[in-house]
View 1 (cartoon, helix red, strand yellow):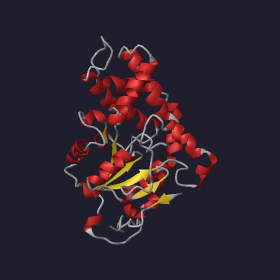
View 2: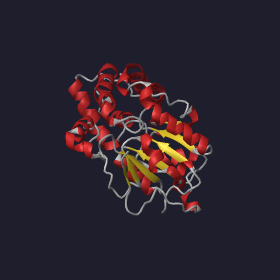
View 3: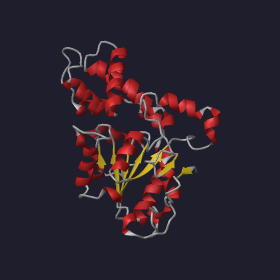
Length: 289
């Protein structure tokens, strides 16, 4: 288990001040609950997005579809919002139907190759971590907040065997916050309101995206960066890092940076959070400052 903490943050402090109360943990889904190394995100952002655009939005070629998808994803970090804005800006092909996020959501849920995620057994350690947290800290909100569309997000969570953790009322997708999306502060504000006006300072954001990590930190949230397997350890020397950079090529400019000042704690995979922040499971403070 590899954990990185900036010098001014100690995850093992026992200061029980109210400033360190954590009531809510918000998890991104893609490349956060599963590892980027499985290739599923690359598949979704290439074949998944492109096939939808060709099949449903009349794009003349895969190349044209991929180019527009990548252009708008770099701007908005969400395929659904990107296509919505592209439609508004007149960038869809002539004669294309109006883009509806629910259509993309259904298409992805029905057509993506979810076997790339592995089976439920691959997530047994993560599920056990969540279950133990619910027992130790039953009042804590465990939330999923994704820039992916809702039907797709629920399908992914079900495939990983995590639906018992993320119930319907604790899953928020891009459909639930449009016309905004992460990293826009309005998208986070909407989630805070739906959770009963929870203060940002009582929330932890768990993310692989530096854009979203930085946005969450500006709002006053604590942050945990999911760097990906091999990102924080010696495995980088065997070519693992280069492989992951290839798989992350559809997310330009957003590779994880564990030493970024917006990162409170960095781990390689989400299942390591219990070792990194044991205070979530005990009466101890989670963060020292």
